[in-house]
Length: 267
Image (cartoon, rainbow, N blue to C red; front, side, top):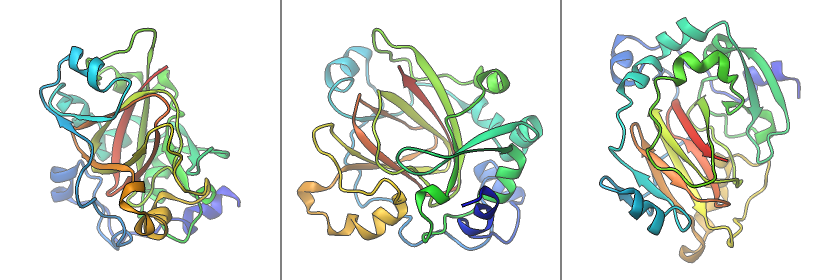
């Protein structure tokens, strides 16, 4: 499908731009208008441990190579968060060309367009009828040199793994969007605005999914039929929280709101 057609087909139009109240509450990313699909909700119970007092030695012993963990309060990114408001990002980067990926497991298609056009035309709730390869998503393919003035204000989690080098991936996506199950090396993912729901399986448990099915469709159609013993670990990450995922863990994401987020991949 031509990328221009995706602008109208795979998002649900909103009715108004954010006002001063939304700016104060959510960086200007909360839009008025129709809400996302009813399936876009938090899980009943987070099954990933949350830690607010984790030391580096505990991280290495209990989580780095074994299981995910949600980190709280380890860094102060209030300055970075302020710079990521809708108004400030559009003022600083509105005319920059960004590269979008299709929201399927292998992200086959890439599309380049101005950041302002992405924000104003694509950041609406996900149309649940769309497939992953018909949905464009801004995450990952950042030109680091162009975004360095922003990234220099970000404080990543203070934990590292020997032999790895951190690399940032910055993203903004609408409610109901996300990436279906995939795996790669270890990393951290922090939510700056909004909420992001995660689903995770260990490397030896391949989830049941279709690589071109959106996470929203999987949650609506496949998830309810899973036996308790076959359900993933899951948790909704809120602004200021960081999820760590170990090497080769399967994971899928679902943005519950228009969300701004940044990942630190350990390659």
